[in-house]
Image 1 (spheres, rainbow, N blue to C red):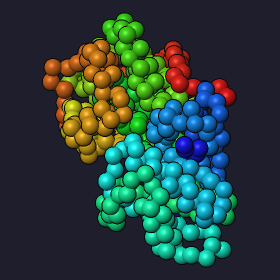
Image 2: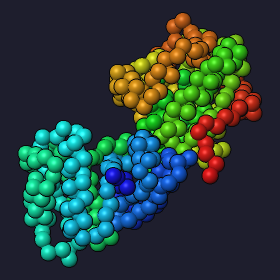
Image 3: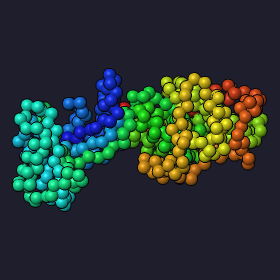
Image 4: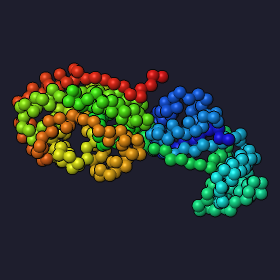
Length: 395
């Protein structure tokens, strides 16, 4: 029955002179999401994005485009030749289908007449088509203008008509890639995958840096990160993961620095390393899953101490004001929660102090670092980075 899908772009439609750039990126991302499917065509027409398809692949296309950022909503539609009579005939086809298959009791018809050469006005056409459906359809339904169970939309255009009755919500946001690129500090917990999702939703392509403490942490913990990245790649263009062994740095901190500063000093090294890798990969910012007050290092003073070492790019914290319950809700929605709660060690549990400082003074933290050869420690860690790619398509 359906032969096309109309994509509603939301924010993309209000980007002024940059709109063609956003639309082009959205089309590219839709094609990426549909990679491996044959028998479809994605294109822009009449200020909209369409996906024409062969009927037997409709369900697969609908399943994939629901995760594409920049798609606010979408509808499977029947496209017909121009003219009023083809529109009426198609509306009847759709009406009878839903009467038979959805047990509808009420209906409404809405018409948009973009072809101004047609003699009737939109409200008159809507009434005429509704009357035609009541007289010619398989079963007469009750008209309900407020909350109809079946709402048939008819759009009459010079290039051809569009008729549909269903509208599905997309994930919204901006097409991934239009906002540049950011480096996410991706742990195996619940928070950072959600932060990754939210920053990608604003149009940023993401790469990830993951810190482990092998052999104190296992190879399975790395595989867990790959699982998270694979799930996140449903919404992005694939993810490059930079695996960094933090153990040598943690060992030196444990040997030379006050125990209560272990967490905050380790965090400062993570931020320095992430910044260096981000700059090398042309990323315009860092992204963390930090939220005020969740753990000892995520107080205002703790964030000030970690921010102080990032010199050249901004640090984005999409979850900064989220409650844990809010984060968990998003994690479940995007499919990362069940992966995140798999019990595996992470680098933050290695050398965990009994009484971590919660309100570190920056001057005290910087003083404690003076006994460390910071640059040598950074260079050694970066020289041993392992890169893994997840969900990357070569096409």
